[in-house]
Image 1 (cartoon, helix red, strand yellow):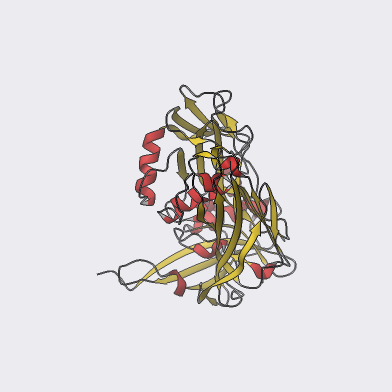
Image 2 (cartoon, rainbow, N blue to C red; image 1 turned 90 degrees about the horizontal axis):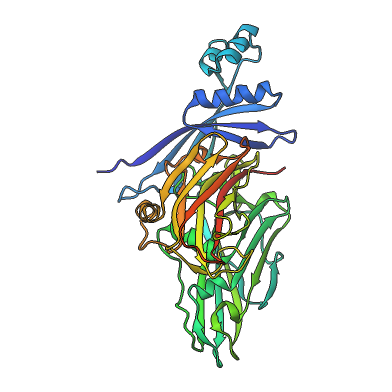
Length: 438
């Protein structure tokens, strides 16, 4: 019989800013490792560093699964002695070992702080049947009421299609027509900059099944597709580390860019299409508790797509504030230059993939069908996602297992391909975490 609850202990390093708020920097289950990072940052001159011990308790459901909605966390700040002997610093600089440094410091506890985890949630509709511009952009901002913590945003696209003389329905047609989902905060935090196809297959991996979608056909009718923006991650030991705390912002901006009938049919003819959007948000009931604020924000973005027949390599983003949780790699054919996730999904020309930085291979000679079959197993997918590979570096549930990019001079995905024709467009999309901006 499963235990009644699951307990997780981790240590989080944060910096106390001048206004009293905290900026999350690092967390891990190994306290010595977090102490090591704190020492390293302190020697760089960073001030206001605090390590917090976080003891989370998650009730378990009858089937043994974790009930994140009723989690609680007990926190205590661990203060290091302010005076550090020169010999201790020297020992650390020579050995690089936090244990040598720890001999000279004595951790002390300060009063405990306790907060609720996710608590009560609700699903709220912000937009209903709003008309979208075909071959254009439609913005949303004033429609959102802020203050609560957001866990998921669900976008439902409804396409009313009249076939006329058009023929030949394209694969993933109702995804291809969604050219861009752009979502950012007024603090300059870019949450999402992805086409609908990317966000659909990210949801496929994260949720273990495809979101709702009606199959498009070259016939008059109404076609629907649901696409989520996932702010929290239920695979993580602490899903709420990336909750979108809307109380931090004055405004949130969502922009939807649609294509046209040419994204639905091979032969357009006299066909036409209109589209509407509904937006639901899963959010906390009221504001998040003061001590349950996020440490990071989630970021979905991609690198410039490449033509695999010309250049089968993609240089990934490197930034001091970016760590990559998962990398989604799409291989297509008959795509459009510069358009991410374009064309028909192709599993024929990709042979194997390497991901490496300036020092080592992170993924070496990973065969395309083998990666896909393991993705299916890891995410409990109903079927292999055609043309998609996923590299998941947080399968252990620790957000600190994400691939740090800040100290790398090179970080590249290299595809070995065989027989890629012109317009074989490949795209690398990251699901990353970034530090909150003040």
